[in-house]
Length: 226
Image (tube, rainbow, N blue to C red):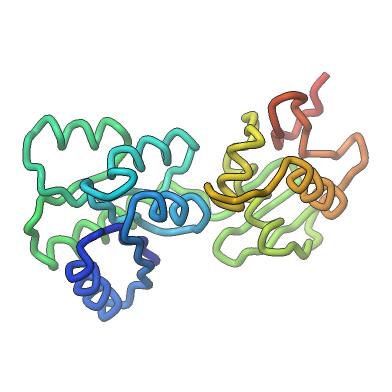
C-alpha cells in the first residue's frame, strides 16, 4: 500500500512511518499543507493520511482542493478535534474516514486496510477512452492494442485527462496537477506536451481523442465536437 502521510508533528510522523513501513507500506511524508496537497495531486497514492491542523493549508482545505480537482484518492483524517461538527465537516468535504488523536496504531492499520479495499473494489484497473487504454499500475498505454511509449510527464498528463474523460480540464488545473502548484510552467509548454501526446496516440481528425476547448483547456473524449 502506498501512503502519503501529511503531519507536522515530526516525532509522530517518524513513528508512524516506521511502523507502517514495518507492515509493508510505502510511506511518503509531508510536514505542511502546501507540500501535502502538491504531492497528493501529482502522485498516485492508495490513501492520504491527513492531519487536520497543519501549517499553510489545513486538512479541510486540502480535502476541498483535492475533491475540487476531481482527485478521488481516499483520505483518512487525523484530528485532535473530537467535536461532532468538525468530524461532519471533514466527511462532508469528501474525506473517507477519520481518527481522533490519540489513537491506537492497530486501529489505524485496520482503517487503512478497509479504505484500500473499498478503493480497490470501486476504482477501475484500466482507464479507457475509445480504443485508448491506460493501466496506472503497470504504467502502460495501448492504442488499438499497440503499445505507446510515453515519458513520465506525458503519462501523468494523459492519465489526468483520462480520469476526467468527457470533462473539460482547464489549463491551470493541468499545469498544477502535472508540474506543481509553484511551477513556472507556461501555457506554451503545456501546448507542446499536448502536441507530443497527440502525435503518439494519433493525430488524424477521425481519431484525435484530445480535444482543444478554446479559451479554457483540453478534454479527452471519443466524440469529435461539432
